[in-house]
Image (cartoon, rainbow over all chains, first blue to last red; front, side, top):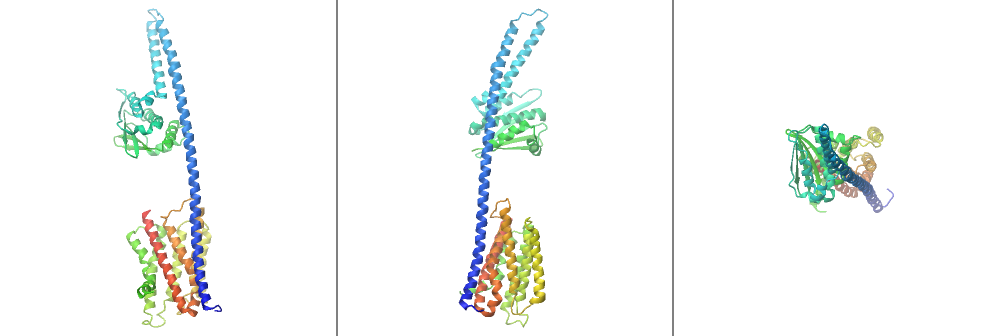
Length: 262
Length: 222
């Protein structure tokens, strides 16, 4: 030991302090680098989500304006054209022998006018605009009831729907799509639509007694190319930050649409 | 420093492992990668109690059985083995070969050092060389853990038990590397200073055990 005692002791103490400081500095640099990196990644993710939301919003808006245009065209032009054809047809004096044919033709024209009107209303619900979401769903469901084939009911006594004023059309389209799918694929005989609202969320539930979807099957189908209906639902779910839950219970299938109340 | 404080500090190596052990007793389910750390804490408790008892009763025990230096050597070898196992059990796909080689290298070092150069049951001193080598290699393990975490695409959470284990161990070995390296010389030429500096080791050991306790606590909350 050539160094003086005090110097040697100081050297040891400084050495220990330097080692500790180096380690702590390394630790702090590690933590701050990690944080900065993930803050940046989160920021990027937020930007990406915002961009996706804007794109979906634009797609939904253009889809709705296109639906409106087609609905107006069907109602105002095709409807008017068929109605005029019906009037002309009525004014034609048919012979005794042709009367059944004229009657059949008139029936067909009535059916075409009725279908065009139905199609036009489906494409653009004026009830939704005038009376709001719940009334539009009620109206849509009531039209499904057919005494022999299907029994469709609603219990929509919630007060929360006003919160979704700007997005009512998206919610309506999802319900429409889900019920149409139920009718088309599940062969249900009973459909019941209800709603529950809390301070945080609004839940719309579709119950049916057909052959419904499970959550796994839905998750599988929504990413399958060509599933247009599911794409519509998925896009709107992203837009509304909602969730769709498919559950099978002994009495039937439940589809719960959870929507956060902003 | 009062007598009470000095006694608490002198026995800190024995009581400090009781802190993580108490948490472990309360929350028995720990992830499998923490098993080597749990084993270490149990081992450290018994080994350190033996070290302190031999030291306190050295006047009543006959020579050469009144030396606790071989227990320090044993503690060092076991500590390195268990913490190397902990780092390997983390399954971080980062310089895996090197990490295994370091563990094997330490084993070779122990055999060569105690086979030819030093005595494991040396009466006068524990092996400064062994403890310093152990501290240096554990510091390497700690630093590579942080480097891997920087590369990993997962954000660091304060509730990660492995982070607390590694940080506690890192602080302990960073402080003690120089102490271990120079301790044989210090106790030969600066006995009083060596005793004082050992208190620094004891404080860092208590801190280390608190970090382990935090890790055990966090692992049950996840």
